[in-house]
Length: 595
Image 1: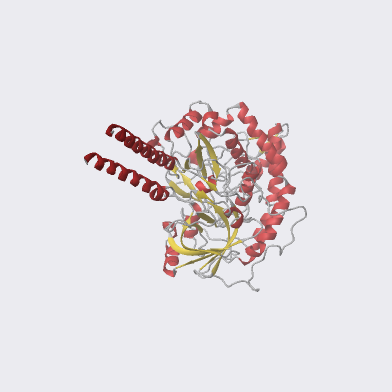
Image 2: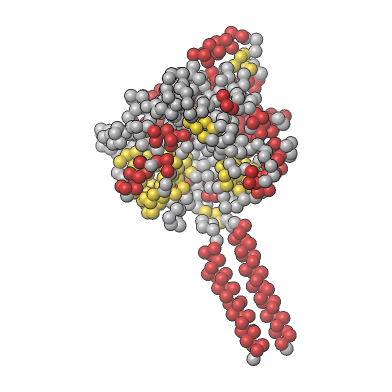
């Protein structure tokens, strides 16, 4: 009888294990294991402007506007191109752009983050989070778009992006750039394993300088994933700082492409500038890649330091002309007035200012000599290559430097040409101009927008001049003085003292009179007309174009759903199966002994 009781007990244990496998295991698996990427075409359609309608309780909306820097999530409903999701989370987002708009007296044009998965287990065609960027400091409203497009063209993993027109509680809030969140969903479009270690460096340690082999000494390398391979991170930091094998810890080709694009578009609100931020690091099978992020200050928008322009070999007159031009320009290298942040060596963030606030820098640096002739051999601003070990280690290797220069040549000859940018900006302008005109919160007037995308001080003019400079530097025809400078000369401290124009530090600079933003917190009246949004096909597409630029970039096409498994899920499966086999083996032995 006793033996039979044991047998019954063992069989009950076996039954419990089966129940666990059949019923509990699916609930223990991470959410979103079946990844749907159809949002790329359904949400980020570059051939049209996506409609985003947010609705939330008036008290919650007022709290967001009264306390924007708290970045507190509020529950809302959202309808995107007719598809409605209830109980999503929305909050303000941003660093310098957030604090700058918060100090403006006549604008509430904040950037927003929508988290579809925050309160309930749901996605928008697979998308978990959507960023709505207000395009602060960008009169062209194309800097970020064109930067991501170039990243795509150069084969880099790039978040999906497209233009979106936002309405909040029935009020038009304006034209934004929608950008996909960098997370496991986005990574799944480019990497076989999207569950590696994802970091977003900012502040302390974001320069990637060696501290020690203790992971706790790198607090600024903010982990954004559930998984973390600490040793892989230490190995990478060791290799770039202490002469290790870079190809063992880096996807060297990918990182070189990234720095080539960043250098070409002169994006110094990045690892290459004073702030050393706005990038992600992703570790996959022990090798790190860089994911691009935040480009509203590209094309020289952040400034590039005190360096002079360039000097053609054998021609001193050009150097003198450039020097005279630089002396007449506004001081370069500071973050835009109230629109940038400085960071001291202790990682403390403070605001830096320029002479006049213009919704940020706008278009003032686009065609400056410092921007056009930004160095490709020492591509840093407000710092030095020694202070940026990842870039320094790559450029110190002759083979890698040649590869980097080859990518710059490809960019200058194939992508960053005047004709290409004229066609691209014309097509984008055709699509978004009606929305720019009726945007009630825009930082710049329609006239300023048009001037920034056509003419002598425009993006096509920049592309022509910048590509010529890159090719001249590569051939040795043009020698460029480095824009690198001492770190603590770049940003004044917050406390004490006045700037050259006698403005008290921290004083809010107001937008120009042409700004059509909010007045006394009220939305301006809707522009005259029937109020209908332009539909796809209403505008004539320039000859030679098939769809919006960047629409066929790598990873942007609609992809089928895929199934991914985390390491923890695999371990759980193996553990249960092992226990099941062990129990079966125990019963088998028990029966044999009982004979």
